[in-house]
Image 1 (tube, rainbow, N blue to C red):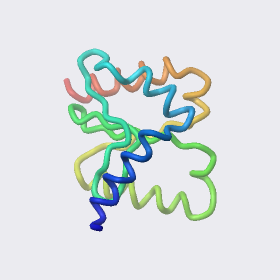
Image 2 (spheres, one colour):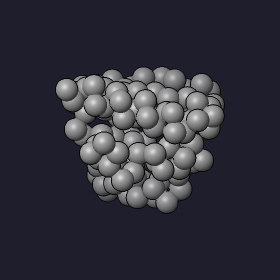
Image 3 (cartoon, rainbow, N blue to C red):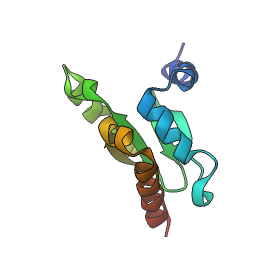
Image 4 (cartoon, rainbow, N blue to C red):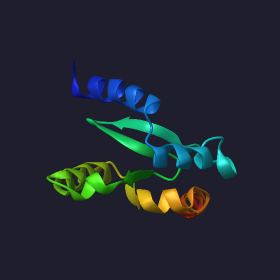
Length: 118
């Protein structure tokens, strides 16, 4: 299995197993808010992006506590470098912010995408 095949299979699995913050945020991003289409668990190379808006070339990553542990910061940095090399900006959102107010986070993401497009 090629890396990209593995990423697609992993993305399908992850769509069925969204974390609580991802699920809450997805409620605010699905359904094309302000005409923007968001994809959840979008495969990109060997990676899977939590949410992606192709129109704005914006990848959104929800970071829980695990992102501060072990080698995760270095892995996230490597992923961000790969994504950036594709011409896509990475927005990292703390999971705690989503849990506090998923609607506000979704609105801020939509506003950022709108700004990037215009």
